Every structure is written in structure tokens, then in C-alpha cells.
Image (tube, rainbow, N blue to C red; front, side, top):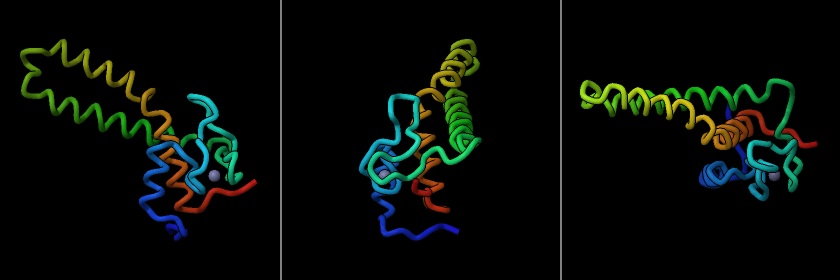
Length: 123
Ligand SMILES: [Zn+2]
């Protein structure tokens, strides 16, 4: 069941895109690049809930990467016969670089989703 909060969906979406805390929107969810804060410095919402909590962010990252590769493959279908090696190289580059580039937003999407579903606990 999705929790109803006082925060508008537009705010949640904006905070998600800007990598802000999904509870208050006042602070970044990242301490430094590729390092998630343990909790929000502003409202104390816990971002690192338990062992294995990160699996949801990984799942979002993997599924999104596969969708992007699939879309790139389908977009390259008209030229794949003439440029087969180039298309393979392009798909490989996407498969390696996209998950790294999308890492922060996969965490942001996961924390926003978890906050909507059951709410992030406060420390
Ligand atoms: Zn917060």
C-alpha cells in the first residue's frame, strides 16, 4: 500500500531528480559521489536501513540499464547489418558506462519508492 504523505508528488519527483532526501528535500542523499549518507543530515531519516537494503537500488540500476541497452539496440536495427562491429562496441560502452552514470539516481529512485511504500524510519 502506498503511503499518503503531505508532500506533493511533484515535490517528490523533483527531489528524486535532484538527489535530495525524499522525506524533507532539504539535504542531499549523498555524502560524496558514490557514498550514500547513513541518514538525512536535516530530518534524520535513515537511508541505510539494514544489510541488503542496497539491493533495491541495484535492481533499479540493472533493469534500467537493460532497458536502455534494448532501446539502443532497437534504434540501431536499421544500420546493424552495415555497421555490426560499431553497434556491438556502442552497446558495450553503454552497458559499462550507463550503470555508473545512473548509480546516484537509482539510489534516489529506490529511497523515494521506499519512502512512498512504508516511509523511511527516523533515527
Ligand atoms: Zn531529510
